[in-house]
Length: 612
Image (cartoon, rainbow, N blue to C red; front, side):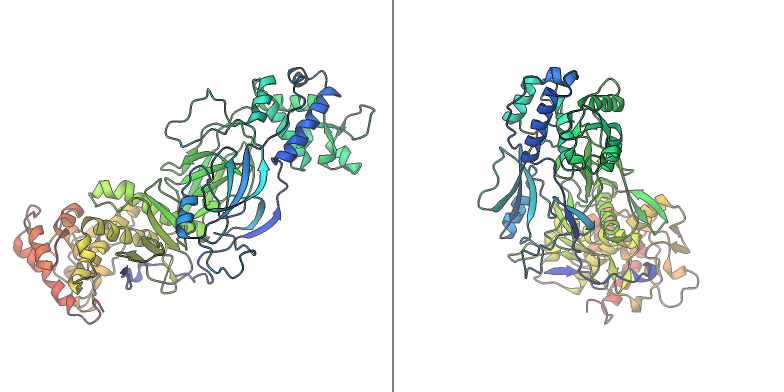
């Protein structure tokens, strides 16, 4: 059974905005193939060139003296670049959950022209669903046993300089596997124990692939090929003579001077900490807030994951220090084992992959529109529910490893998947950005996510309530009214913390999220009743001004969500629920007042639109 919130009674609080048409998961548009500097073949050429330079024109450099015995080293791969093609969901889970592989469903060896969720590979014609039948790309350590029986194709061999010394301590709590040190690394370190040569080696590899940046080119000097005069040229002068980067010979003395200028006394492979801030625009309150608890992956030149970090409560992150100079960042919308936001498909993790390369610079990313904003809002709602709402209000926790399918374009009902039987995996809950053709607004996305998570926690507490057998309209009303109440209270509390003008609650005022629910007449209600809100709030909707019709009489207040949840557990009708609440009444409340409030539920149950 799929427990679908068909009516999703959020009424007129949502903002209106035209939906985006098209596929719910958006394919990315790739640009040109990257000229990859870190292939084993290119690194071998770079090392040979470096040794030739040491023998010839830069004999007086510090590096020449250090590395004079380093010739004859063969560059062996430290990593292999693979693409995998799982044949079913089990293989897909095996590959994607492997923390060493760190797979990407987007090719790593191409530029990205237009952001999206997946790559629609032309080799896989006729595959309309990019699920488990799309390629997954990974940079695999040379000595790591790849999963057996999963189709894997080795695309290239890489050599990455070692990221850290064995003696360095790991940051507490960070999942990190040291890069394996193959014979190439050991041979280089045997003549260069401080690892200073690796910076020169990478610069030469970048030069050979025309990847040195403008600052480096301006600081370096070069010899021209076949020129035996010993004259040095600036890059600008060499370009005017018709040369490309890859044709030039770097002067190692100018390399040393450039690195010394960059790092002062620490002229070799100086450390820095990848950092930044990830924020999202909350249009409901007109301000940016941090994306909290999201995972940031730092990839060396966009390929090898070298650092991982989590954003804090303001969206800031800082990874452990690294000597790698050029990195690309990506943020993954997952809750560290609590949940994963899925990008419109159970097989695609929601993420935002930065396209720029950062040279010892932080990444400050703000999501003000589009899919990444939606995924970030769903992520924030789920993270807030697990880490704040559950302990603060005493709510029953949804299960860990929850899969949240975030649908951006489809105008469908959000769902809690209650009791599924079938071969294909599906999400545990679904949250949609569009409801009845209109954008929910950031508070609507928060509220809907909370609503569906509340269903999930309720099911974990009381599975029998969601049984397909002996289902009833009463149970539907209790299930939906509970989720509706939690949604209302949590949404108003959250946004009132950001903006204390968002919510007001007095005997004659209820303004905020779901305020229209408090103004409904009994005759127009369905299974999404405000009974839980009524048990908590101070407003008596029967006394709200300028509210015509027959509203419930609500003289009840000050119940906690934990009390209501405890009474709801194992209750199967309104009377059971009310009696349990009556046994634990707040001070000053009478049985008659509680009975008076509950009396409208049986009237709502008779409405033709209820549980239809």
